Length: 81
Image (cartoon, rainbow, N blue to C red; front, top):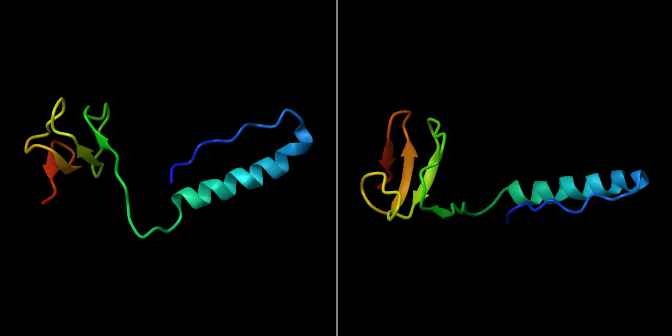
């Protein structure tokens, strides 16, 4: 599940309840899970950082070995076999 921010209340007295609800939704979105889902991308990340993981579609962005899961080693993308 991805976190999508809720509408911020107009009245300040609603902030506390809104914030508690938002924090609960964030916790649910990033909490423990049985799996990790990585959305496929077709463009290389603009600022790759060492340890970054990406699932390349392999069409417009092919890091070297076609579609698949890659890890950035600080210099290039290594496909995870």
